[in-house]
Amino acid sequence: MTQRSRRVASLRTVALLALCLSAASAFAQPAPFDYRLSFPSPEHRWMHVEARFTGLPDGTAEIRMSRTSPGRYALHEFAKNVFEVTITDGAGRVLAPTRPNLHQWNVTGHGGTVVISYKVFGDRTDGTYLSVDAAHAHMNMPATVMFVRGQMARPARVTLVQPPGRTWKVATQLFPTSDPLVFTAPNIHYLMDSPIEFSNFTLRTFTVDDGVNGPQTIRVALHHDGTDAEADALARDVEKTVREASKIFGELPKFDGGVYTFLADYLPWADGDGMEHRNSTVVSRRGALRNPDQRQGILGTISHEFFHAWNMERLRARAIEPFDFEEADVSEELWFGEGFTNYFDGLILERAGLMPMTALLNDFAGVINTVTLSPGRQIRSAVEMSRLAPFVDAAASIDRTAWPNLFISYYTYGSAIAMGLDLSLRDRSDGKLTIEAYMRALWRRFGRSGNTTPGMVPTTYTIPELESTLGEVTGDPKFAQEFFQRFVQGRELVDYARLFARAGMVVRKRAAGKSWLGDAQLQVGAGGARVATLVPFESPLYKAGVAQDDYLVSLGGTTLTQPSQIDEVLGRHKPGEAMPITFVRRGGEKVDGTITLEEDPRIEIVTVESAGGTLSAEQKRFREAWLNAQ
Ligand SMILES: [Zn+2]
Image (tube, rainbow, N blue to C red; front, top):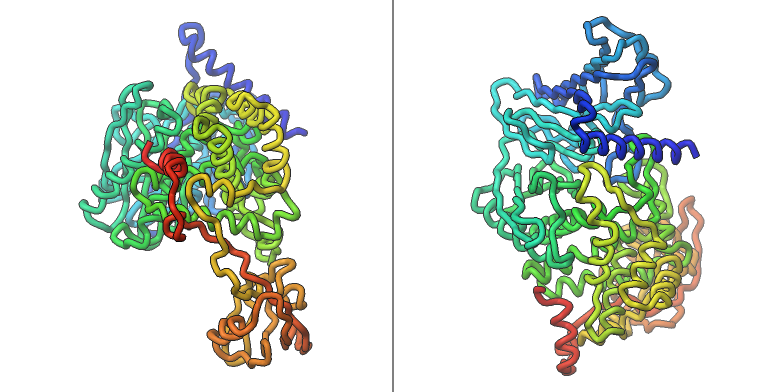
């Protein structure tokens, strides 16, 4: 209750400020909060922050370290890395804070100015945390800078100080000034959304004119240990991806300052991540561009994050706007924000010629297998899965959970819904109406508003509004209502086999007639087969009473000592057959039981041509309109 009212209040403040700024003659612009970021010994993985907050109202200044980061949904408790905090007033007089909680420093008697100085440790290179070392400072702002409660509408100025003996460059979506080490943000929300890469990165740029917003610049700031030729090749693929993505919406977002920046870190000590921001993204990965196995993953993340510049950064759910830096941000719409983005990231790469159609079909089959077979769908819908993000999105607790049985990622679930919607629309309109028309309608109704005020999205959506827009696009509100009721709020799945057939594709069992125990990992060694993962609800192993950490001693009369034996036994017995199983439960109880085999239920998707059939002219048209470059 309190949370909600505070959000509304801060939104009003910002709206009011925007009004003030546009009437600049009537009101003086407030002085920016000044942040000075320095790196006296980066090799020791900490940096120094000095923040000067001026023009504060009388009373207690509540200075906070964030608990969350935009684009992430769990709590990350960034205050844990902060140390040696000192606080003074504007005249340098030391002020003693009180600490109402672990994240907050309360300061009174400040006379309107608080200068807070601290060190912060950071050693994780990704889109969420802070990384300082001899090679770079890679800063996600919520992990780096403090803010003042109730002062989120204030502008900010950020000054970077070179580490001793180095001349690093800066890549960021913060607004540049005439000084290459000084940047500004129109408000604290924008500052928090603006990661900084400070290093000797390689820079590639290209221009895209979408015919609507005029020419805009795309920058690829690449921190890696590879060659310039590899950087050139990556930039070429990024450009293809950006151009193909812009065709989905028919225009690019209007980037603030006309610039969008990829902050890419492919380093042996980086961690895999992709984090969307308004005019930039952080994409990171352990490894290198030279490794061909990494290529598809690297481009998949790039395609995904760039799509977020529309879907998430501007086309944005009401529940996460403005973003809450104090509590976990709960959104029932992540199946759309993340899941629809997931559907498009592969489709865009395939259309751009950067991913073979067979690889895309494999991804689609994986998505269908997950939503069809995961026990979680018997329990929760895509909307309910989205609500769980604070528990599963890089959240860390150390107890075992039953997530494999209770949860389906909203990325996967939402991707299945998007695929189902796209194919359903194409199917019922004979290709005249597609998911692109829906995305464009949402963009016009909600997304474009996000072009206007850096750091804010004025017009946000709710699930009923997603539904009503689908009703308008199709001219069939009943279809929209039924689709949302059954597949979004409900737990049904579209008939994928029938819909894929329209494109001349066959959805078939990938191991027809083959016996199967259930998707649990079995580690076979001298002592038997250890069940290394959670046993899926209602699988043959589950029904036989087998659980994680049990040891399978024998199956169908064969004593298990080698991995190949399981396939041999399954090959000798048909689905439906019951056979003896002996296993030892954790704790030592030996069980002589029976297991009834089932047919491997997993599917694959292949073209009708490769399955020995003939592609009809109508199927060919359907397929090309869907999968060819637009
Ligand atoms: Zn995403």
